[in-house]
Length: 370
Image 1 (tube, one colour):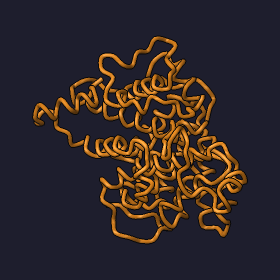
Image 2 (cartoon, one colour):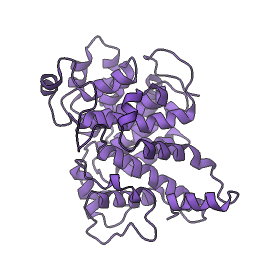
Image 3 (cartoon, rainbow, N blue to C red):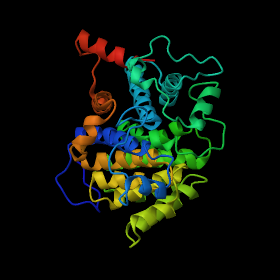
Image 4 (cartoon, helix red, strand yellow):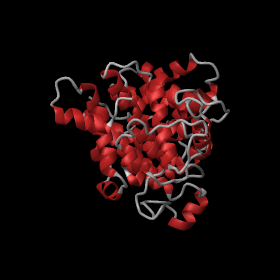
């Protein structure tokens, strides 16, 4: 059972399924809140929405509660991991990085783009997410993700670039939800982030985020989880930037600095270590889910990504019930996100040999084993 973050009010332990759902739904809510102010400065946000800044969804991409590429790629990360498990259960050799790389290639197609080296991710079966038409919509996708996937010669190879943009870390919550140990989550998060982001800070931040998710599921407080994650980072070369950013976030969380100034000192979130640090800071000091994600989006910088990561953390810590229903009611693809979260929670216990034919067929159609 889960403990809440030490700086949040103490409460009853959260049901694990609620934490899985809260993690993905919370991330999508933070993403949708930030989408409307992603390219605005903090001063512009205050001018437009008042001194308290953004307090609710605004219309973007033609609707309120619209998700962006952050949530799209999070869903395809989850799909890739579950399809890898289905492949393993079917008796095939499985490289989870490779299978998830194919999932990212399907996401690339949903953005109206394609791989330049002939990778064909829809054969022999495209799977469930591909058929959801609402996902076939460009939502300000990151240039690094598009370029890396467009130029990939193999689905599971690390990208050759020097980018540390936040597009690797912002999609990594499913890696922490999927594996059993923080060490495995760290390694998996690093590998999956490196499919698009070649700078060490770009993929080490993804590993750190995945490990934090796993440790929170294991009952650690966020404050306590930062110590083993820092130890994991310290064992890797060129981890200084991510280590320093997380330490600075932890120090600011116990300082007397006002949140707006603290976030300004942490950066703007366009790069991976800054996005993770801002989200961690907000989750550490938040009195509740609502204020935590609003804090994470009302700043100069990449508001949807910092909102998404903070929403992942707070949604996991506090559970689905802590997310305001008014935000969930308008959230785009709420049912799809909930289904994916449920599948991540349940998939370890799927028994394809014992399940009846209808259940087997439904799972195999949703997550084809290749």
